[in-house]
Image (cartoon, rainbow, N blue to C red; front, side, top):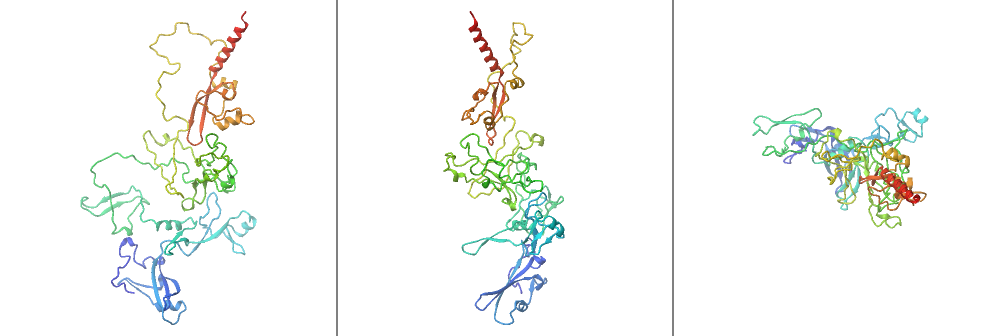
Length: 518
Protein backbone atom coordinates (compact mmCIF):
# COMPACT_ATOMS: atom_id res chain seq x y z
CA UNK A 1 0.00 0.00 0.00
CA UNK A 2 1.48 3.29 -1.10
CA UNK A 3 0.69 6.41 0.90
CA UNK A 4 0.92 8.28 -2.44
CA UNK A 5 0.03 11.96 -1.94
CA UNK A 6 -1.82 11.44 1.31
CA UNK A 7 -0.29 12.76 4.49
CA UNK A 8 1.46 10.09 6.53
CA UNK A 9 0.47 10.23 10.19
CA UNK A 10 3.50 9.93 12.41
CA UNK A 11 5.98 12.17 10.64
CA UNK A 12 5.54 14.77 13.36
CA UNK A 13 7.30 13.81 16.60
CA UNK A 14 4.30 14.58 18.82
CA UNK A 15 2.25 12.02 16.83
CA UNK A 16 4.25 9.32 18.61
CA UNK A 17 5.79 7.75 15.52
CA UNK A 18 4.55 6.16 12.31
CA UNK A 19 2.34 3.09 12.28
CA UNK A 20 4.50 0.01 12.73
CA UNK A 21 7.06 1.66 14.99
CA UNK A 22 5.42 0.69 18.31
CA UNK A 23 5.58 -3.09 18.12
CA UNK A 24 2.60 -4.98 19.56
CA UNK A 25 0.72 -1.72 20.17
CA UNK A 26 0.19 -1.34 16.39
CA UNK A 27 -2.31 -3.66 14.67
CA UNK A 28 -4.89 -3.74 11.86
CA UNK A 29 -8.62 -4.29 12.17
CA UNK A 30 -9.40 -6.24 8.98
CA UNK A 31 -12.98 -6.33 7.59
CA UNK A 32 -14.51 -8.31 4.71
CA UNK A 33 -17.72 -7.16 2.97
CA UNK A 34 -19.84 -9.02 0.40
CA UNK A 35 -20.98 -7.62 -2.96
CA UNK A 36 -23.83 -5.77 -1.20
CA UNK A 37 -21.38 -4.14 1.18
CA UNK A 38 -22.57 -6.20 4.16
CA UNK A 39 -19.94 -6.98 6.76
CA UNK A 40 -19.45 -10.75 6.82
CA UNK A 41 -16.20 -11.27 8.75
CA UNK A 42 -13.51 -9.35 10.63
CA UNK A 43 -10.30 -9.98 12.55
CA UNK A 44 -7.45 -8.15 14.31
CA UNK A 45 -4.19 -8.70 12.46
CA UNK A 46 -0.87 -8.31 14.31
CA UNK A 47 2.02 -6.23 13.00
CA UNK A 48 3.84 -9.43 12.01
CA UNK A 49 1.40 -9.85 9.08
CA UNK A 50 2.77 -6.68 7.45
CA UNK A 51 6.10 -5.49 6.05
CA UNK A 52 7.19 -1.93 6.84
CA UNK A 53 9.31 -0.46 4.04
CA UNK A 54 11.03 2.45 5.76
CA UNK A 55 12.69 3.63 2.55
CA UNK A 56 9.42 4.79 0.98
CA UNK A 57 6.93 4.70 3.87
CA UNK A 58 5.06 1.80 2.26
CA UNK A 59 3.20 -0.87 4.23
CA UNK A 60 3.39 -4.11 2.24
CA UNK A 61 1.08 -7.12 2.70
CA UNK A 62 -0.89 -9.83 0.88
CA UNK A 63 -4.69 -9.37 1.04
CA UNK A 64 -5.31 -12.83 -0.45
CA UNK A 65 -3.57 -14.49 2.48
CA UNK A 66 -5.65 -12.51 4.95
CA UNK A 67 -8.89 -13.47 3.14
CA UNK A 68 -7.98 -17.17 3.00
CA UNK A 69 -7.02 -17.20 6.68
CA UNK A 70 -10.64 -16.29 7.44
CA UNK A 71 -11.92 -19.30 5.45
CA UNK A 72 -12.76 -17.75 2.07
CA UNK A 73 -11.20 -19.45 -1.00
CA UNK A 74 -13.03 -17.59 -3.77
CA UNK A 75 -15.60 -14.89 -4.37
CA UNK A 76 -15.93 -11.14 -4.85
CA UNK A 77 -15.24 -9.11 -1.73
CA UNK A 78 -14.64 -5.58 -0.56
CA UNK A 79 -12.00 -5.41 2.13
CA UNK A 80 -11.05 -2.66 4.53
CA UNK A 81 -7.85 -2.25 6.56
CA UNK A 82 -8.04 -0.01 9.63
CA UNK A 83 -4.53 0.78 10.85
CA UNK A 84 -4.80 1.27 14.62
CA UNK A 85 -2.61 1.85 17.65
CA UNK A 86 -3.54 0.53 21.07
CA UNK A 87 -3.60 3.44 23.55
CA UNK A 88 -5.23 1.76 26.54
CA UNK A 89 -6.56 -1.63 27.55
CA UNK A 90 -5.59 -5.13 26.50
CA UNK A 91 -7.15 -8.50 25.78
CA UNK A 92 -4.99 -10.21 28.38
CA UNK A 93 -6.34 -11.01 31.85
CA UNK A 94 -5.14 -10.55 35.44
CA UNK A 95 -6.15 -11.80 38.88
CA UNK A 96 -7.49 -9.16 41.28
CA UNK A 97 -8.23 -9.07 45.01
CA UNK A 98 -11.86 -9.21 46.15
CA UNK A 99 -11.37 -8.25 49.82
CA UNK A 100 -10.03 -5.16 51.57
CA UNK A 101 -7.08 -6.03 53.79
CA UNK A 102 -4.37 -4.07 55.61
CA UNK A 103 -1.92 -4.22 52.70
CA UNK A 104 -4.29 -4.66 49.73
CA UNK A 105 -7.72 -3.46 48.69
CA UNK A 106 -10.41 -4.60 46.29
CA UNK A 107 -9.19 -4.27 42.71
CA UNK A 108 -5.44 -4.58 43.42
CA UNK A 109 -3.70 -6.94 41.01
CA UNK A 110 -2.67 -10.25 42.62
CA UNK A 111 0.93 -10.93 41.60
CA UNK A 112 1.90 -14.05 43.57
CA UNK A 113 0.71 -16.45 40.87
CA UNK A 114 2.82 -19.28 42.33
CA UNK A 115 0.56 -19.25 45.39
CA UNK A 116 -2.93 -19.97 44.02
CA UNK A 117 -5.34 -22.88 44.21
CA UNK A 118 -7.98 -23.66 41.57
CA UNK A 119 -10.97 -25.77 42.59
CA UNK A 120 -12.60 -28.35 40.35
CA UNK A 121 -15.29 -25.85 39.36
CA UNK A 122 -12.68 -23.26 38.31
CA UNK A 123 -12.76 -20.94 41.34
CA UNK A 124 -9.35 -19.43 42.16
CA UNK A 125 -8.13 -18.75 45.71
CA UNK A 126 -5.10 -16.84 47.06
CA UNK A 127 -3.50 -19.83 48.79
CA UNK A 128 -1.89 -23.14 48.08
CA UNK A 129 -3.97 -26.31 48.23
CA UNK A 130 -3.14 -27.14 51.86
CA UNK A 131 -3.81 -23.61 53.19
CA UNK A 132 -7.09 -23.47 51.27
CA UNK A 133 -8.36 -26.78 52.64
CA UNK A 134 -7.36 -25.78 56.21
CA UNK A 135 -9.07 -22.35 55.99
CA UNK A 136 -11.80 -22.56 53.34
CA UNK A 137 -14.09 -20.03 55.04
CA UNK A 138 -11.45 -17.28 55.34
CA UNK A 139 -9.29 -17.79 52.23
CA UNK A 140 -9.70 -14.94 49.77
CA UNK A 141 -11.28 -15.76 46.42
CA UNK A 142 -9.59 -14.11 43.44
CA UNK A 143 -11.36 -12.76 40.37
CA UNK A 144 -10.24 -12.99 36.74
CA UNK A 145 -10.57 -9.68 34.90
CA UNK A 146 -9.53 -8.92 31.33
CA UNK A 147 -8.00 -5.51 30.68
CA UNK A 148 -10.75 -4.36 28.33
CA UNK A 149 -13.06 -1.40 29.00
CA UNK A 150 -16.82 -1.75 29.30
CA UNK A 151 -19.45 0.00 27.19
CA UNK A 152 -21.37 2.05 29.74
CA UNK A 153 -23.81 3.93 27.50
CA UNK A 154 -24.73 4.24 23.80
CA UNK A 155 -26.00 7.52 22.36
CA UNK A 156 -29.54 7.63 20.91
CA UNK A 157 -28.06 8.12 17.43
CA UNK A 158 -25.90 5.02 18.03
CA UNK A 159 -22.86 6.93 16.76
CA UNK A 160 -21.15 7.39 20.13
CA UNK A 161 -20.43 5.15 23.08
CA UNK A 162 -19.36 5.99 26.61
CA UNK A 163 -16.76 3.67 28.12
CA UNK A 164 -15.93 3.01 31.73
CA UNK A 165 -13.03 1.29 33.40
CA UNK A 166 -13.37 -1.69 35.70
CA UNK A 167 -11.88 -1.61 39.18
CA UNK A 168 -8.37 -2.79 38.41
CA UNK A 169 -5.84 -0.72 40.33
CA UNK A 170 -2.93 -0.54 37.90
CA UNK A 171 -1.74 1.34 34.82
CA UNK A 172 -4.99 0.08 33.26
CA UNK A 173 -6.83 3.00 34.91
CA UNK A 174 -3.99 5.50 34.34
CA UNK A 175 -4.03 4.74 30.60
CA UNK A 176 -7.79 5.23 30.52
CA UNK A 177 -7.45 8.65 32.16
CA UNK A 178 -4.52 9.70 29.97
CA UNK A 179 -6.31 9.14 26.65
CA UNK A 180 -9.00 11.58 27.83
CA UNK A 181 -6.54 14.23 28.97
CA UNK A 182 -5.50 16.64 26.17
CA UNK A 183 -2.68 18.07 28.25
CA UNK A 184 -1.12 17.69 31.65
CA UNK A 185 -0.10 20.52 33.97
CA UNK A 186 2.89 19.63 36.13
CA UNK A 187 4.71 21.89 38.54
CA UNK A 188 8.48 21.46 38.47
CA UNK A 189 11.59 23.13 39.82
CA UNK A 190 13.60 22.11 36.74
CA UNK A 191 15.99 24.82 35.51
CA UNK A 192 15.34 25.92 31.91
CA UNK A 193 18.00 27.92 30.01
CA UNK A 194 18.11 29.51 26.55
CA UNK A 195 21.19 28.42 24.63
CA UNK A 196 23.26 31.20 23.06
CA UNK A 197 21.80 34.70 22.97
CA UNK A 198 18.83 34.50 25.34
CA UNK A 199 17.09 37.37 23.51
CA UNK A 200 17.13 35.55 20.15
CA UNK A 201 17.64 31.84 20.84
CA UNK A 202 14.83 29.37 20.16
CA UNK A 203 16.70 26.46 21.72
CA UNK A 204 15.95 25.48 25.30
CA UNK A 205 18.03 23.32 27.56
CA UNK A 206 16.78 21.81 30.82
CA UNK A 207 18.66 20.30 33.75
CA UNK A 208 16.22 17.81 35.27
CA UNK A 209 16.34 16.36 38.76
CA UNK A 210 15.87 12.64 39.34
CA UNK A 211 12.43 11.45 38.12
CA UNK A 212 11.54 15.05 37.22
CA UNK A 213 10.14 16.60 34.05
CA UNK A 214 12.05 16.02 30.80
CA UNK A 215 11.33 16.76 27.15
CA UNK A 216 10.01 13.70 25.28
CA UNK A 217 10.16 12.85 21.58
CA UNK A 218 6.46 13.68 21.25
CA UNK A 219 7.22 17.30 22.18
CA UNK A 220 9.67 17.87 19.33
CA UNK A 221 8.15 20.32 16.85
CA UNK A 222 5.51 21.39 19.33
CA UNK A 223 4.95 24.81 20.86
CA UNK A 224 6.28 26.07 24.19
CA UNK A 225 4.55 29.04 25.74
CA UNK A 226 6.31 30.88 28.56
CA UNK A 227 3.97 33.51 30.03
CA UNK A 228 5.46 36.73 31.42
CA UNK A 229 8.97 35.73 30.42
CA UNK A 230 10.14 39.37 30.34
CA UNK A 231 9.88 41.12 33.69
CA UNK A 232 8.25 44.51 33.45
CA UNK A 233 7.13 44.69 37.07
CA UNK A 234 7.49 42.64 40.21
CA UNK A 235 4.94 41.78 42.87
CA UNK A 236 5.10 39.68 45.99
CA UNK A 237 3.19 36.42 45.70
CA UNK A 238 2.50 34.16 48.65
CA UNK A 239 4.76 31.10 48.58
CA UNK A 240 2.80 27.86 48.49
CA UNK A 241 4.24 25.10 50.62
CA UNK A 242 3.91 21.40 49.90
CA UNK A 243 2.63 20.71 53.44
CA UNK A 244 -0.82 19.17 53.66
CA UNK A 245 -2.15 19.85 57.16
CA UNK A 246 -5.17 17.58 56.65
CA UNK A 247 -4.61 14.15 58.16
CA UNK A 248 -5.42 11.15 55.94
CA UNK A 249 -6.78 13.49 53.22
CA UNK A 250 -7.83 10.76 50.76
CA UNK A 251 -9.39 8.54 53.42
CA UNK A 252 -7.33 5.52 52.36
CA UNK A 253 -6.33 4.69 55.97
CA UNK A 254 -9.41 2.90 57.25
CA UNK A 255 -10.17 1.13 60.52
CA UNK A 256 -10.20 -2.68 60.41
CA UNK A 257 -10.76 -5.48 62.91
CA UNK A 258 -8.12 -7.93 64.16
CA UNK A 259 -8.51 -10.00 60.98
CA UNK A 260 -8.01 -7.04 58.69
CA UNK A 261 -11.67 -6.79 57.67
CA UNK A 262 -13.22 -3.35 57.22
CA UNK A 263 -15.23 -2.33 60.30
CA UNK A 264 -19.01 -2.28 59.98
CA UNK A 265 -20.11 0.90 61.82
CA UNK A 266 -23.72 0.96 60.62
CA UNK A 267 -24.92 -0.05 64.10
CA UNK A 268 -22.59 2.11 66.20
CA UNK A 269 -24.66 5.32 66.08
CA UNK A 270 -28.29 6.29 66.55
CA UNK A 271 -28.80 6.63 62.81
CA UNK A 272 -30.79 4.49 60.39
CA UNK A 273 -28.50 1.48 59.92
CA UNK A 274 -30.08 0.55 56.57
CA UNK A 275 -29.18 3.96 55.10
CA UNK A 276 -25.60 3.75 56.40
CA UNK A 277 -24.72 0.07 55.82
CA UNK A 278 -21.91 1.20 53.49
CA UNK A 279 -20.34 3.61 56.00
CA UNK A 280 -16.71 2.98 56.99
CA UNK A 281 -14.51 4.45 59.71
CA UNK A 282 -11.56 6.48 58.43
CA UNK A 283 -8.63 7.34 60.64
CA UNK A 284 -8.42 10.97 61.90
CA UNK A 285 -11.99 11.75 60.72
CA UNK A 286 -15.37 11.72 62.44
CA UNK A 287 -17.93 9.15 61.25
CA UNK A 288 -20.37 11.87 60.14
CA UNK A 289 -23.11 11.19 62.71
CA UNK A 290 -24.63 14.37 64.24
CA UNK A 291 -26.65 14.23 67.46
CA UNK A 292 -28.82 17.33 66.80
CA UNK A 293 -29.35 18.01 70.50
CA UNK A 294 -30.49 21.57 69.81
CA UNK A 295 -32.04 23.60 67.00
CA UNK A 296 -34.82 22.76 64.54
CA UNK A 297 -33.78 19.15 64.06
CA UNK A 298 -33.77 18.02 67.72
CA UNK A 299 -34.80 14.37 67.91
CA UNK A 300 -34.27 13.57 64.20
CA UNK A 301 -30.83 11.96 64.37
CA UNK A 302 -32.33 8.48 63.84
CA UNK A 303 -34.08 9.63 60.64
CA UNK A 304 -32.58 10.24 57.22
CA UNK A 305 -29.05 10.46 55.93
CA UNK A 306 -25.91 11.65 57.71
CA UNK A 307 -22.56 12.30 56.06
CA UNK A 308 -20.31 9.25 55.78
CA UNK A 309 -17.10 7.84 54.32
CA UNK A 310 -17.71 5.10 51.71
CA UNK A 311 -15.57 2.81 49.58
CA UNK A 312 -15.28 2.47 45.80
CA UNK A 313 -17.18 5.67 44.93
CA UNK A 314 -14.20 8.04 44.73
CA UNK A 315 -11.69 8.68 41.98
CA UNK A 316 -10.54 5.42 40.33
CA UNK A 317 -12.67 3.41 42.77
CA UNK A 318 -11.13 4.91 45.90
CA UNK A 319 -12.70 6.10 49.15
CA UNK A 320 -14.62 9.38 49.39
CA UNK A 321 -16.92 11.48 51.59
CA UNK A 322 -20.56 11.05 50.58
CA UNK A 323 -23.27 13.63 51.32
CA UNK A 324 -26.66 12.09 50.45
CA UNK A 325 -28.53 15.41 50.52
CA UNK A 326 -31.93 13.83 49.85
CA UNK A 327 -33.52 14.16 53.28
CA UNK A 328 -36.46 16.08 51.80
CA UNK A 329 -38.18 12.68 51.38
CA UNK A 330 -38.68 12.63 55.18
CA UNK A 331 -40.36 16.04 55.47
CA UNK A 332 -43.84 14.51 55.81
CA UNK A 333 -42.87 12.73 59.04
CA UNK A 334 -44.21 14.21 62.28
CA UNK A 335 -40.69 14.38 63.76
CA UNK A 336 -39.32 16.38 60.82
CA UNK A 337 -39.45 20.22 61.10
CA UNK A 338 -40.54 22.63 58.40
CA UNK A 339 -36.95 23.00 57.22
CA UNK A 340 -36.12 20.63 54.36
CA UNK A 341 -32.34 20.37 54.36
CA UNK A 342 -30.43 19.17 57.39
CA UNK A 343 -26.72 19.71 57.94
CA UNK A 344 -24.36 17.00 56.64
CA UNK A 345 -20.78 17.32 57.87
CA UNK A 346 -17.58 15.53 58.85
CA UNK A 347 -14.68 16.98 60.77
CA UNK A 348 -11.20 16.31 62.07
CA UNK A 349 -8.77 18.02 64.43
CA UNK A 350 -5.61 19.00 62.57
CA UNK A 351 -2.17 19.32 64.22
CA UNK A 352 -0.91 22.60 65.67
CA UNK A 353 -0.27 24.85 62.68
CA UNK A 354 2.34 27.00 64.42
CA UNK A 355 4.52 23.90 64.73
CA UNK A 356 4.43 23.59 60.94
CA UNK A 357 5.64 27.12 60.27
CA UNK A 358 2.22 28.73 59.73
CA UNK A 359 2.02 32.36 60.84
CA UNK A 360 -0.51 35.18 60.94
CA UNK A 361 -1.52 36.38 57.49
CA UNK A 362 -0.85 33.08 55.68
CA UNK A 363 -3.44 31.79 53.23
CA UNK A 364 -5.02 28.34 53.37
CA UNK A 365 -5.37 26.69 49.96
CA UNK A 366 -8.08 24.03 49.78
CA UNK A 367 -8.17 21.69 46.78
CA UNK A 368 -10.48 18.73 46.26
CA UNK A 369 -12.38 16.76 43.65
CA UNK A 370 -16.17 17.17 43.88
CA UNK A 371 -18.79 15.21 41.98
CA UNK A 372 -22.48 16.08 42.29
CA UNK A 373 -25.69 14.76 40.76
CA UNK A 374 -27.09 18.31 40.96
CA UNK A 375 -25.50 21.03 38.82
CA UNK A 376 -23.61 23.82 40.64
CA UNK A 377 -24.08 22.21 44.05
CA UNK A 378 -20.90 22.31 46.09
CA UNK A 379 -19.62 21.92 49.64
CA UNK A 380 -18.62 24.35 52.36
CA UNK A 381 -15.24 24.23 54.10
CA UNK A 382 -14.52 25.78 57.52
CA UNK A 383 -11.57 26.05 59.88
CA UNK A 384 -12.17 26.88 63.54
CA UNK A 385 -10.10 27.29 66.68
CA UNK A 386 -10.87 24.39 69.05
CA UNK A 387 -9.50 25.93 72.26
CA UNK A 388 -9.21 29.69 71.85
CA UNK A 389 -10.96 32.72 70.41
CA UNK A 390 -9.82 34.20 67.14
CA UNK A 391 -10.23 37.73 68.55
CA UNK A 392 -12.25 39.64 71.14
CA UNK A 393 -13.74 43.10 71.55
CA UNK A 394 -11.61 45.80 73.11
CA UNK A 395 -12.50 46.13 76.83
CA UNK A 396 -14.35 49.34 77.77
CA UNK A 397 -13.54 49.17 81.52
CA UNK A 398 -10.65 47.81 83.56
CA UNK A 399 -11.09 44.21 84.79
CA UNK A 400 -12.19 43.41 88.33
CA UNK A 401 -9.31 43.77 90.78
CA UNK A 402 -7.32 46.07 88.50
CA UNK A 403 -4.69 47.98 90.54
CA UNK A 404 -3.84 51.52 89.53
CA UNK A 405 -0.44 52.49 90.93
CA UNK A 406 -1.37 56.20 90.70
CA UNK A 407 -4.33 55.86 93.08
CA UNK A 408 -3.76 56.19 96.84
CA UNK A 409 -3.64 52.95 98.81
CA UNK A 410 -6.21 51.75 101.33
CA UNK A 411 -6.70 53.73 104.57
CA UNK A 412 -7.35 50.71 106.78
CA UNK A 413 -4.90 48.07 107.92
CA UNK A 414 -4.54 45.06 105.60
CA UNK A 415 -6.34 42.04 107.10
CA UNK A 416 -4.09 39.20 108.18
CA UNK A 417 -6.74 36.49 107.80
CA UNK A 418 -9.94 35.99 105.76
CA UNK A 419 -13.28 36.88 107.35
CA UNK A 420 -15.35 34.22 109.09
CA UNK A 421 -17.13 31.88 106.68
CA UNK A 422 -15.00 32.96 103.70
CA UNK A 423 -14.57 30.31 101.01
CA UNK A 424 -12.20 31.05 98.15
CA UNK A 425 -13.76 30.93 94.67
CA UNK A 426 -11.84 27.93 93.28
CA UNK A 427 -12.86 24.86 91.30
CA UNK A 428 -11.78 22.61 94.16
CA UNK A 429 -14.07 24.37 96.66
CA UNK A 430 -16.93 24.45 94.14
CA UNK A 431 -16.56 20.71 93.57
CA UNK A 432 -17.14 20.05 97.31
CA UNK A 433 -20.61 21.61 96.91
CA UNK A 434 -21.63 20.03 93.56
CA UNK A 435 -19.87 18.37 90.65
CA UNK A 436 -18.68 20.39 87.65
CA UNK A 437 -21.29 20.15 84.84
CA UNK A 438 -20.40 18.68 81.43
CA UNK A 439 -19.81 20.89 78.40
CA UNK A 440 -22.58 19.93 75.94
CA UNK A 441 -26.36 20.19 76.13
CA UNK A 442 -26.79 16.47 75.45
CA UNK A 443 -24.48 15.56 78.36
CA UNK A 444 -26.20 18.08 80.65
CA UNK A 445 -29.62 16.59 79.90
CA UNK A 446 -28.28 13.10 80.54
CA UNK A 447 -26.71 14.15 83.86
CA UNK A 448 -29.39 16.46 85.31
CA UNK A 449 -32.52 15.98 83.21
CA UNK A 450 -34.24 13.49 85.47
CA UNK A 451 -36.20 10.46 84.23
CA UNK A 452 -37.84 12.42 81.42
CA UNK A 453 -35.45 15.33 81.05
CA UNK A 454 -37.92 17.67 82.72
CA UNK A 455 -35.39 19.29 85.10
CA UNK A 456 -33.44 20.97 82.27
CA UNK A 457 -35.54 23.66 80.54
CA UNK A 458 -36.38 23.36 76.83
CA UNK A 459 -35.11 25.18 74.91
CA UNK A 460 -31.81 25.38 76.76
CA UNK A 461 -31.33 29.17 76.50
CA UNK A 462 -28.25 29.38 78.70
CA UNK A 463 -25.99 32.43 78.40
CA UNK A 464 -22.74 33.54 79.99
CA UNK A 465 -23.46 33.96 83.69
CA UNK A 466 -26.17 31.26 83.86
CA UNK A 467 -25.61 29.07 86.92
CA UNK A 468 -26.55 25.49 87.72
CA UNK A 469 -29.66 26.78 89.46
CA UNK A 470 -31.32 26.71 86.00
CA UNK A 471 -32.02 23.01 86.58
CA UNK A 472 -32.27 23.19 90.38
CA UNK A 473 -28.59 23.00 91.26
CA UNK A 474 -26.90 24.89 94.11
CA UNK A 475 -25.38 27.54 91.77
CA UNK A 476 -21.82 26.60 92.72
CA UNK A 477 -20.92 26.79 89.01
CA UNK A 478 -21.75 29.29 86.28
CA UNK A 479 -21.13 29.52 82.52
CA UNK A 480 -18.05 31.63 81.79
CA UNK A 481 -17.86 31.11 78.02
CA UNK A 482 -19.86 29.59 75.12
CA UNK A 483 -18.18 28.47 71.90
CA UNK A 484 -19.67 27.07 68.69
CA UNK A 485 -17.40 25.41 66.10
CA UNK A 486 -20.17 25.33 63.49
CA UNK A 487 -20.27 21.51 63.51
CA UNK A 488 -21.10 20.00 66.91
CA UNK A 489 -23.13 22.89 68.36
CA UNK A 490 -22.55 24.95 71.51
CA UNK A 491 -19.89 23.99 74.02
CA UNK A 492 -20.30 25.42 77.52
CA UNK A 493 -17.32 26.25 79.78
CA UNK A 494 -18.00 26.35 83.53
CA UNK A 495 -16.23 28.29 86.28
CA UNK A 496 -16.70 28.42 90.08
CA UNK A 497 -19.50 30.69 91.35
CA UNK A 498 -18.82 30.70 95.10
CA UNK A 499 -19.23 34.49 95.33
CA UNK A 500 -22.98 33.97 94.74
CA UNK A 501 -22.93 31.12 97.26
CA UNK A 502 -21.35 33.43 99.89
CA UNK A 503 -24.00 36.09 99.24
CA UNK A 504 -26.76 33.53 99.78
CA UNK A 505 -25.25 32.37 103.05
CA UNK A 506 -24.76 35.97 104.20
CA UNK A 507 -28.35 36.88 103.38
CA UNK A 508 -29.65 33.87 105.28
CA UNK A 509 -27.61 34.84 108.34
CA UNK A 510 -28.89 38.41 108.21
CA UNK A 511 -32.49 37.28 107.97
CA UNK A 512 -32.01 34.87 110.87
CA UNK A 513 -30.46 37.70 112.87
CA UNK A 514 -33.51 39.86 112.32
CA UNK A 515 -35.81 37.08 113.44
CA UNK A 516 -34.07 36.43 116.76
CA UNK A 517 -33.67 40.03 117.82
CA UNK A 518 -35.93 40.91 120.81
